[in-house]
Length: 68
Picture 1 (cartoon, rainbow, N blue to C red):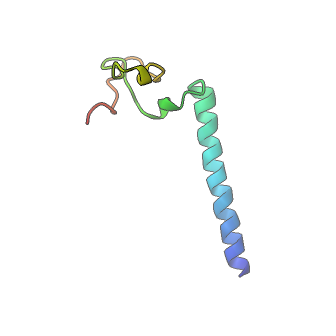
Picture 2 (tube, one colour):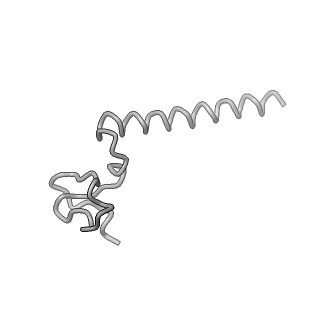
Picture 3 (cartoon, rainbow, N blue to C red):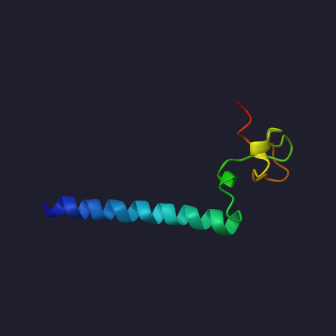
């Protein structure tokens, strides 16, 4: 029983560390814009719809999210 509790604690700490790292990356590298986790390039740009106006755009890149 003790091994399961320790394994659960290690798992929860690991998940918290990864989520914390991702939060800090978005906050400090992309000014808090979570759409930066998806690569939208300036050469093709985001779709011309209202809901995509705040999309983070990587300059000089085609991006990969519009390839589908």
